[in-house]
Image (cartoon, rainbow, N blue to C red; front, side, top):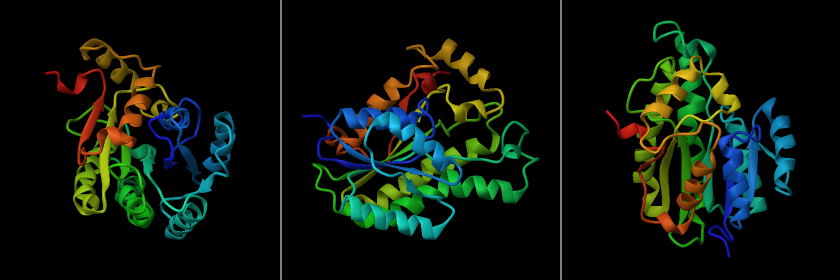
Length: 259
């Protein structure tokens, strides 16, 4: 019996097999979970192709978090498939290019607003829409929501407005945890160190992150190995961490705590 036997979990953000979400999906299946994947817009076809590498996970659910009708339809589809949700992995993030690598005075408000809606507000959108399904979880300790994070407590070179979005995501997670905790739904952030993914390649100066982590993380850090992130997600989704909510769990080799 695996850690997630009989768990029903929605995992968003699977694009390619180097994504953090893919690694989490693969491990969840190994631990006995039944999973659903979602995709958005033109990326949905890519998610479908990648889903084949995971085996039979069913049809990918279309879920554009900027479209309330798609969120509503996704909730109805998950109700039909699973009847409940024991876990939700929020691995959604996007910022227009003006928001990254150009400082804080370049991006127009409409670009910042779009980044906020997709990268931060969407967590509230999904938890709110799926709350009735998460309330039905019969997992020991209740349902678990994980949002993939990148340390929002400090400023990183080139990360610019996306750093602001991550700081907002961390704060939002605490407020959501307060609101849905009585429903036995826990909400936590998983703050991973830099991993070489397609998404990471879109961040200007990503190599600066790599160099810093390799030098300063007490445990060291391998930007090509996301297995520790996936393993930590298994614990967070499982009853092992049933009394943990409103928390940021760092999987970064200890870099975040160094001076």
